[in-house]
Image (cartoon, rainbow, N blue to C red; front, side):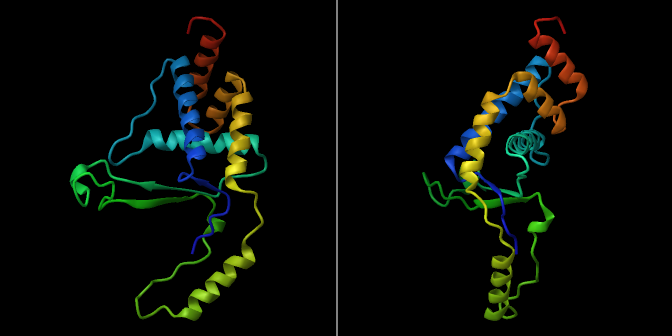
Length: 185
């Protein structure tokens, strides 16, 4: 059982816009440093990880002491062969992806066998979840506030956040700062 806590919910359009803004800034800052963003492959999602780490760091820096506990979104395969019929957006590979960043959100786990889980077990788990669920402002409001603060940051502050998020090296950051100052890198 997982308590989502403060969740970056990628089923909400305004959160997608926030992530898009963070990606564009990430890409621009790497260009200042003369670097290209990492690439995603089937197995390694290096670009996705870097953008998410930067997005989390922006939220944490602008909404202190709030930290992102989880993130979730819907994955829909681009492969047309996986569609259940021609022209359908329903895919055999559609699924929810969930990232748990805060281990305290993992409330429990059990092996589920169709005949082994009783109603009282589910009831107990739900009651435990209610006891430990803190009152939180809506994630949409927090992310909206983070986006406003992000937009108000200087480019140099954003570069510093990228270094803190571990998605830009100090050497790359120095090169980007030099480019921003109008010097030759």
